[in-house]
Image 1: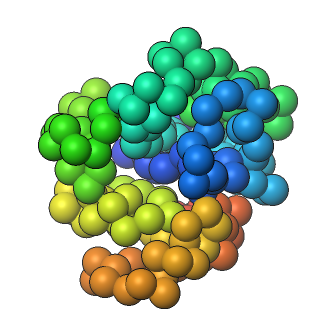
Image 2: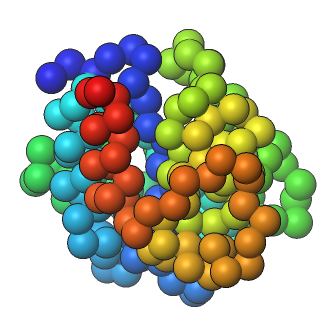
Length: 186
């Protein structure tokens, strides 16, 4: 099915699509998909959704890995997705360390503004799926629908509280996607 202009989903990467690590995902060998996440992205694609990633990757700014390695990690993800019939339309990332105060590192909204401009659509009500409070805060600021998954840092985020009003909570990306698709088809 061809992607619809108004059907967009924004995903965080680590903890939503792939297993997260407190030591960062620094090499393609460390990238491992969360069970069901790749198939969920393929289901979104089949339902006509464009899927993009907005991810903080401060490991680049900290010197833990370089852009060549980040690209190799993303290539591994894209290859794994293509094997199940899915695709990510674009990957937006912030390579800056947290202490730089840039405009793109979530919870700042720079990546979201760029996504909105690139696709010429407002992000109001666009599902924005993440596992950390900063993912949800950025989604909330731009008027998106913040969705927390319990994978990655999601359980800790839920326990800490302070979620934006209206945040929806699901066990994982697969459960969130089933609900998104079901609601859109009603």
